Image 1 (cartoon, rainbow, N blue to C red):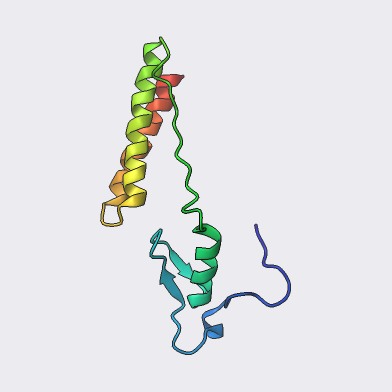
Image 2: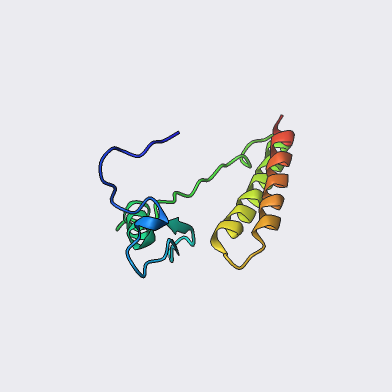
Length: 116
């Protein structure tokens, strides 16, 4: 478990510490996560997560389809489907995220079962 450093904190730790007129949580306009700590908490989030170099997400590519074994190709297809569902769930705030995550989980389980 992480622990806050001793001394003053750069943003409020409780709603009682907020400046007048500030809201306790803000939705990040970039990643749509709810951020606690008022405007200072949102500023801290944006300066550490969303840097000048852009969003630090790194695409991951798992290539199993080049294998001569059919089971690896089947697993690769399931992983590809799972990645698509996960991407949709994370990038489309208007989607049914619960259903998309369930579909991704199903394809991940199928890929693991196929690869065994």
